[in-house]
Length: 203
Image 1 (cartoon, rainbow, N blue to C red):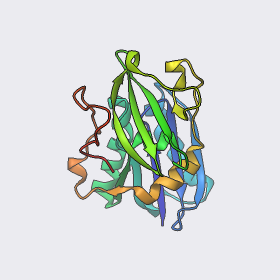
Image 2 (cartoon, rainbow, N blue to C red):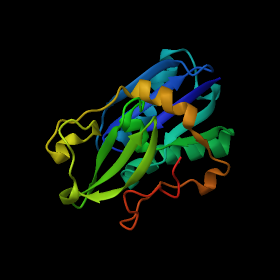
Image 3 (cartoon, one colour):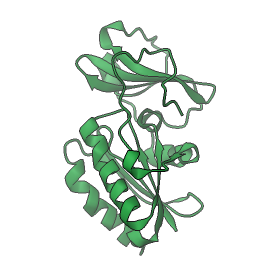
């Protein structure tokens, strides 16, 4: 049986198939802003066909729960819910900022556009995420040697994204099972979620 990993949280469409030992079998990881909805199903179908498998061979779907584009998150989430409810497939979730940071083998930040002159920001220390929230861009003060993943261009740096296959491979081991697919909803950070305190849904 295989695991299907999906991410439609921000700028990319990430679709990856993993075997039972969590080794990647096939992947599609490309920028697809505003095209994720139309590309998702044909991409999934193409990946299964490329390894002579079908969705019926799937026992787990891992998706990013957020934070991120509410509309984007619901694309993968709706697909996963449908598969879970009709085919009995287990859903698991990972944090979208974790995926966009990659394996946290060094301390640093992930920054992604939250619109309205704000960013989603998470911090990683000693191999794990210890902070997450929404921050006004004007309040940011990051040193030139600080590791910044994600949309660094928001703060005058270069955008830097991980190898999403490697990142998903790492974070699969931290995925959280969803007991009731009907209760699955995008992780939404409100303005009152102060950066510097753990999120209530911190994994």
